Length: 207
Image (cartoon, rainbow, N blue to C red; front, side, top):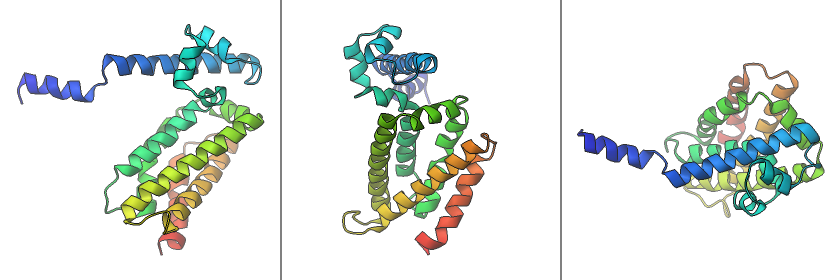
């Protein structure tokens, strides 16, 4: 491979300046929001204050987040988006639950690295608007997972209930695994819990 080939490959793989700038602005908004939430609580902070802390306009805030709740849930939503993306790229030969388990490895690793996860979850659980928004986002995630699983299984989720059943059952079990993991003090066994969940569901959903 020539140097020009290497340069062309790097150009395709590395995000462009515009994408990097957008990603940086989004992260600055998240960081500013969480700093304010930690200081004053979610409900006491306004979009204008978050935007001001990130040195952008409220209009810029709404280019990245539809509502204030979305910036509070951004980290969790990023893991959901990664799960859907990773599932779509898993080998077609993998059974659905195996593909879900493997697609979760990277999101699980990133989740474990969130040192303030407990405080984030407490903030979410203590605010009705965040709970409602999280439920809506979870529902959208399960629809996306059902679509990807349906494509993998060669069926239409609108006709065949199996993709949606697998998605909703797995994600409900995953939610319980996350909850028990947090309650247990974030031990270094989250992936093991996900693996056990996959094995537990395998016989009932793939048998």
